[in-house]
Image (tube, rainbow, N blue to C red; front, side):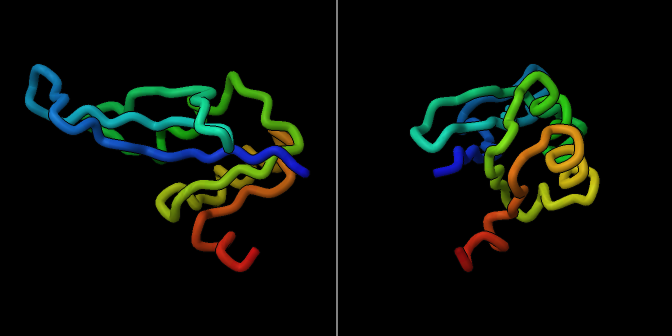
Length: 98
């Protein structure tokens, strides 16, 4: 059985920055719910720009990495397959046929 990790973003309900904007986190989770990495998404940014810095320190070699449609980007697929040697990057929608 191959290892699987999920990348997912969540806004923290009730948590706000000094400027009033919502706190949003992007996380990498193992199948058992353990958080492997987490980073705050900048207030004037989005999950797409936080994806690479989140995964840079990790070694997901051989893992199946899942994420939602927002993160389905060509650069993310190249990062996962060519640089990180994952088995297959997969958006949640694309994985539903498995």
